[in-house]
Image 1 (cartoon, rainbow, N blue to C red):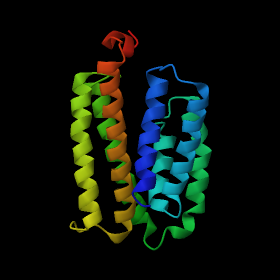
Image 2: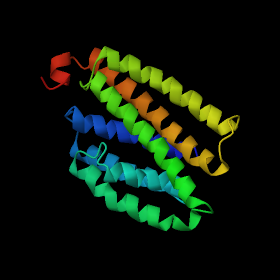
Image 3: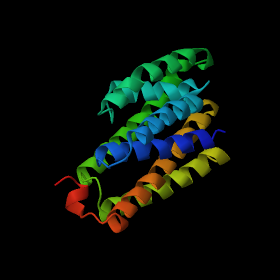
Image 4: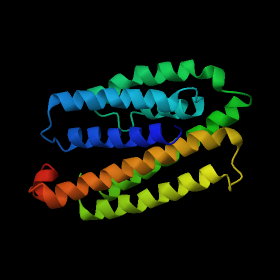
Length: 194
């Protein structure tokens, strides 16, 4: 389950995010189901894993990607799950918190860099870039899980979850953009709200 829950979280999160950002005409029932699935898979992914849930608190408090009311409504869920995970912090938690925070800040920097390069919602360039990221995160997940790197034991599980989440998020992103670009019948201007 260390792979399935973050993998599903990445897919559901990206589908919901694209529905909102691209303003796709989708039934509100489907949107609400996706919101419930995000809460479910986040909770299952973060369960008993302080070093996965704590960086999520940082992301939410930095308001990174939390750009609509639903994302903001997740903040209490993330904080409560993290508080429930405090007993699983273990020893030398300050060092561990710094390491977990560094991993998340790296993802935020990457996302900011990507937003500067590709501010549009859909483009061929963005598909190619995210396709490359998909392979980077897949390789990262395999390397982390195989324990060939001298990573501290506490970091393997949350880093693997993060890489799995990002891998599936990129799969969903590339799939959605490819579909919209080639099969939706809409122009790039329409898809990008221009």
